[in-house]
Figure (cartoon, rainbow, N blue to C red):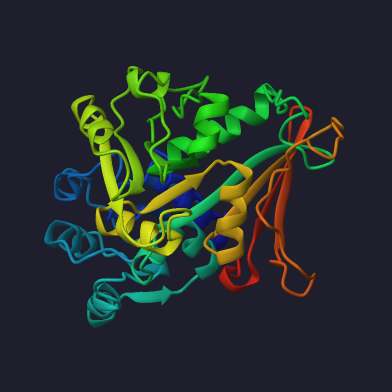
Length: 361
């Protein structure tokens, strides 16, 4: 295998869990000698890094691959010197201590190539890197629709437009995101669980965030009483029903009160507050008005549209993106397609806004 293949393997090792710990990037190391893979490490499977390196056999020479520049940990550095590592490849520099490890290696006569396949490394840690410089969380939009862009029939029938396979992809997105956000109309119409239900392993439920400016939610809504360890936040206006707020609080719901416009809520204010309480990634799943609010404001990093081979039609049938819409094509949000894949009978298209696209080597 060449250096590119080894770094791609290191990235696979880094994302083994698929679930990012807030505040901590995906990190891994591949130890290679010639064509042989000697050892691997990542901070998900081996959080106690110093113990791992203390127990690692000492070799003679070799190459290390790091998708993310490691911090200077004494046990690792001592092992590197004892193993006489002669070359290190690093994809992305550490955001807290950039070049610190690189300079240490160079001072110890170890050849280092950094920003190697930088685009791939940035994609691996895009949530972490975005949160280091933005005042709102990393946001992914996801919606399923018919070939003609509908998310329900004119009578509101919507379960299920997407097939089982593509719904598993969406549940994987739920697993990999810290939170999931919907508007109150989605709750009132569809009564979703907003949990992670994967066939091949036990996923993690995301924190549930409901935008409900006037507190329309029913106290008996099933979502509020299901068995899940994930918290539920309701974002509402400070002037909404105080008695209902108290009842929700007694049921374990977290209330976030917003001032300013009563309806709709100030989206940037909401997102900035969520970032301030530790929310780093949000999967937005509806409804159509919410989708347009995020798209109009350009508050999204990635978008996944699941397109099913069905035509629904109907002037009053809801589209995936609603709201008031743009007045002109010039004003409309432009996207760049990144990839498309077939999942069962459906096609999932991945897109980004050109301003946030990173070159993927």
